Structure formats: structure tokens, C-alpha cells
Picture 1 (cartoon, rainbow, N blue to C red):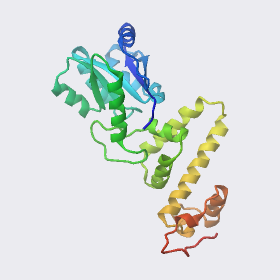
Picture 2: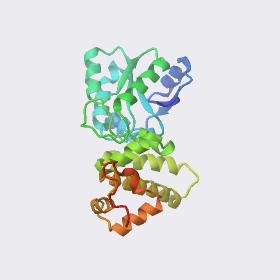
Picture 3: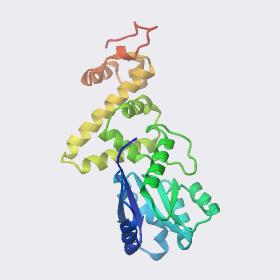
Length: 266
């Protein structure tokens, strides 16, 4: 679990957001940032503020939106319209909302909620709970209400801090669906677009990572049998072997003790 989290307060009322931030006690491990939602091109499209903000949310761990009786209907429509495009979990800061309405919002995709007055320690605990509940990156599950499956932030963690999570993704990359791979690509683009590397350098780095992960996954799937792994990847065995040499991958580490003599050369 990450020590420091960044949460964005997505709002449409600047004065209200400023007052809330000024009145909320600080939390060392959760930083709250105010972000004004992009204006709607037409008044009848105000409810699309979440979907219009999806690209802006990529650099945060979670999003907090104010919900009160006057905005309940538009919040329902916003969550319904944005379900497939939200890159991070959305939490509600609720005021005078009944339990039945909250259940409806959770079914529409709201990750969780906190009540006024806002306590950042409480919000941080709920964000971490949701991250734990969502499971490790790279694990694809049937879509359920209130669960987030477009995990850009987790993939950003993978890009910045490779480790056990990278190994889990490598082991399952052959079974991933488009949303997980799209999330990884979006996280990579967001990360490297803000760096000093050129497009060519960033692309080369990520292609190399993908090749390594794919070769690892293919060899693991076939217990270190290079011929079978190359066939499953639809690559010539010599080309597959060249990728193994390029990334210094030893097929023997993927062989079980009961089959130590699996094919190991090109």
C-alpha cells in the first residue's frame, strides 16, 4: 500500500471548494487538490463533467465529488455516463443524502462516500480499502457495480515502481483484455509525456518492457519449452530465441523440477 496518496476534489463551484479546503484539517499522507471541472459546451450537458474530466484525472489516485440533494439527479447521470471512461475511483462527499440514494450511487459506480465535515484520514482509509478490494493490477474480473476495472493508477505504479506487481502482470499478460492493456498504455503515456525523454526513447523503453513480459509469460505458460512458447506467440523459434537473448532470459528458470530436460536451445 502506498504511503502517500493524491486525491482531486472535482467541483463546479470555485468559492465552495476554496472554503472546504481552508476548513479541512491537513493529512500528512493524503493531499487534496481542487480541480474545476471543464465547462459544458451546452447547458444540458452539465452532467458529463466526469467523462470530460477523465484525462485530467490520470495523475491522481482518487476523485472526490460533492453530492447533495440538489445535485443528486445530475450525479446519477454523470456516473452512468462515465462508467467506462473513469481512470480512477470516484468517492462522494455527501450532505443530507438518504441511504437508498447512496445505494443507487454505489450501484452506478461510486466507489465509496464520506460525509461532511470532511476528514481526510477517513477518506484516505476508504481509498486504501478500495484499492485493496479492487485487487492487484492485471487481474481481470467480471464487471460489477461499484468496482473499477480501468486501472490506470495501478498501472502507473507499475511503470514507476516495478516489482512484484510487474511479475503478476507478466504472468497474466496473455490473458488480459483490452481495458487492462489500454490502462497500461494510458499510464505509460501520462508518465513519459511529463519526462525529459523523447517519444522514441519512451516508446523503446515500453516496447522492451512488453517484449520481456510477453516472453516471460509465454515461457511460464509452457514450462520453459521454447518451441511451444514460440509457437503460441506465432513467432519463428529463432526470432523467439533472439528476443530471449536480447532480454537475457533463461528458459531453465521456468522448467519444473520434474521436467529438467525440456528443450532449451534455438
